[in-house]
Image 1: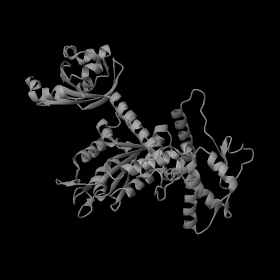
Image 2 (image 1 turned 120 degrees about the vertical axis):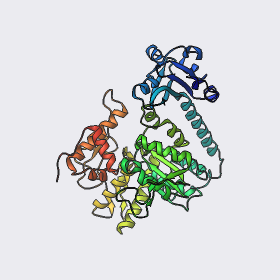
Image 3 (image 1 turned 135 degrees about the vertical axis):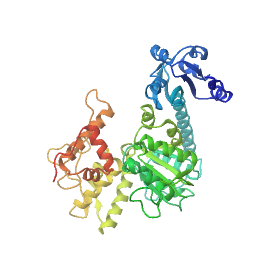
Image 4 (image 1 turned 60 degrees about the vertical axis):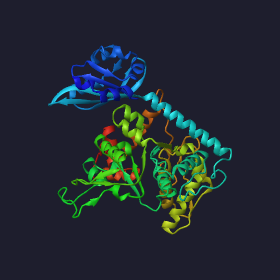
Length: 473
C-alpha cells in the first residue's frame, strides 16, 4: 500500500495537531502522528507495531473508532477513554479502492484542550469584569441602552456589557441557558447594537422545522425542485437574513445530517438552493442558542465536534431568574405596562404580592413569570392584582407560592428526594407536568401552547417520558 508513503500524507501526519491514525483494513496500524504518543501512553514506534484490536483489548483506547468503521463501512465518531485517563473525541473515515475497504483514517482530539480553552475564556471574562468594576470601559459609569430588556442585577449587566463589546464584530455568539431565560431577547439586543441593525433579524426555531423540510426552508429552492414548489422558487431563511442576523434557537435539536449542511455554510459562506446548481454567497451574522449541554452532546455523538468549535466562539451564559432576583421587579413592571397598553386598563400589583413574586423559584424563568402575570391580570376583577392564599397552605415564602389568580391552586417548591440528583429531579418534575397536561389537553399543540414551547419539542418530550394524551375531546 505504497500510497501511505506519499510525501503529502506524511507531511500531514507529521505536522498535525490532532492525533491521526492510519489503519489498514485488517486492523494493523500503518502510521500515527507524533502527538498521539502523549495521549495514548505508547511511543509512536510501539503503536505502529500493533493493531487496533490489541489496543482496545489492552484498554489503551476504548472503544476503537477504527473497528467501528471496519464493521459498518461508514464514518463514525465516538468518545474514548485512554489508558492515560484522557477523554478524547475520535472521528474515523473509511478509504475504499474499487469498492473494497483498504484503510481507515482517524483523528482524535483531547477534550482536555477544550477544557483549557474554556478556562482561559472564563479568566479573560473575569478580568474584563474586574476592569469594569474598577471604572474601566466607556459603559462602566453610564446606563446601558437595553430597550425592552431588564438587567439590573450585576450578572446580567456583565452579560449585556459583554454582548455590547462583541456586537461590532461578526463573531458567532452561542447563547446558553435554561428555557425561558431570555436568549431570544438578548439576541435581538445584540443585533440592535451591531452595525447590521438596519438589516433583518431572522429568528429560526430549529426544533420546530421537520427534518424533511429543513433544507428547503433554510436553503430555499428553485422552481420545479419538487412537487408543489412555488413558481419562481423561494429564497430560504439564510438568504432572507442577508445583511442582518440569523438567529438559530434550539440549535442542539438539529439532526446530524442538518448539522453537516450548516457547517458547510459556515465554512464556505455559500448556499445552494434545493434543485439548483448555482452557489449563492450569503452574508449574515450567526447567533445560536440552546438549553442543552453541547459539549456533552459531542461526547455522546449527537452533535458534531467540528460544528461545536465553529459555534462556540463567544459563549454567553444567561443565568436563571432564581439567580438574579433583582431583575424581577423590573420584569414585572415592564410586562405589566405592556398588558395595560394591550388591554386598555391601568392595573397595578398589590404591595403584599411582591413577597410572593420575589420568593418563588420560577423554574420556567422569565417566560413563566410573564405567563403567570398575564393570567393574574386577566383574572383580577379589580385594578389591583392581589395574591390569593389557598386554605391550609403554608406561607408563600416558606414552601409555596400562592396563586395570583382566582381558582388556581398554589404550587409547592420542588424538592430533592434522598439520593436524587438535580438532573433526575428536573426530569421527574418535567414528567409530572407533562403527565398532568396529557390528562387535560386534547392535542400536542395545546400542550405546546400551554408550555410556551414548540409542538415538535412536546412530541419529543412525551416520547422520552413514555407519555401520551389520554383522551380526546
